[in-house]
Length: 502
Image (cartoon, rainbow, N blue to C red):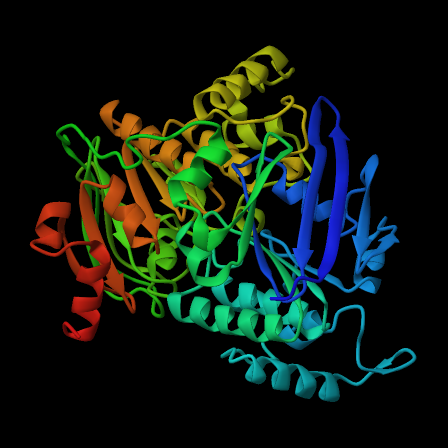
């Protein structure tokens, strides 16, 4: 890392209707530096990088690149100034190939003629050079979320940017892919590239980041050297106070069996999965990215065709062929990918909250606006969602608050089993703490939660029973105490089971 400042953002101000998103924010990035940007959901991090990326235009403030004042009013302006952004929400075109997505807007060819063969060849070379196990000819829609994330990273790296912004780049990728990503980042910084790194995983800071800037409520709090700053100090800067009892686990006694799954298979990623869950219980479904967790949740919810096996609800065998069947039997699924599988991004918070419970306020002849407003406000309050109003377009909320709206939507259906797939993706440390307390409260009130996560420490922190899955098969299941036995963590359990104790 050099002392050359490649980027300065000075006194940046950005307003939205009813909210001051950025207030006199300052940020600087050195050449060859990985600079972390931390803050709670809604702190202004994503807004700041969208100003840098030309998606938003700041009302006040200056941006300097390599000492020169620049005007960035569009994505094209950002690209011309050597800025590339990997957004938290993927922006790939699903029905186009990997190669076409990498070269979108800068296709290989002459005039109106695109040389697809040459473009695919070039894209494959870039993927191979970066250590990506991805076929450039594959359609984006056929790739799992983790590989789609790696395509986004490849696309950004391929334009040879001097400023690279990564917004939660490790949220959906495996440990091996994270290791490869960090290698790519180190190689880029050696070439003088400055990287802005947004992540809620505090453990990643020591490994990859040089400095960290903290934001809170749309304002700049301070900048610290990572190696010289304790995690608790950074968390206190983020939330304005010291947190206590960061890890919480204290549940009541579960009741009758609510859901039983026997021999569930989808012919591909799920192979003979068995487990059960009782009323008021939180069951953790744990496994690394690609283990078959999400596919199991989708199969239970009727999102997968040609599923075999048996599903029982309160002791009665049921047929679930589609999500409508699942909802009828009292199941609700908050999916891994909010953008692709759940949210209507151009619609309001109200619309996204009530879309599954239309019958509660739509009659034969009229819409009960008062009732719809009441339902929406109930779940805004329950989830502590930060939004200026119910009419706010949900795409303008932070990722964490979008997640809260999604959970609220499915709670509104009053489900017997709430299935949460990667629910802490995009949540900051206080948001994670809030989430743990929230699902604990749901269990204490008699609600049943099935939580799927590749973050084994999260499963360990909030669940009664645990199911560990790998390559579509259940490796072990039981109470948390039974599964962990005398081992120190679920991570240690997993690696003993998959690597024979090595």
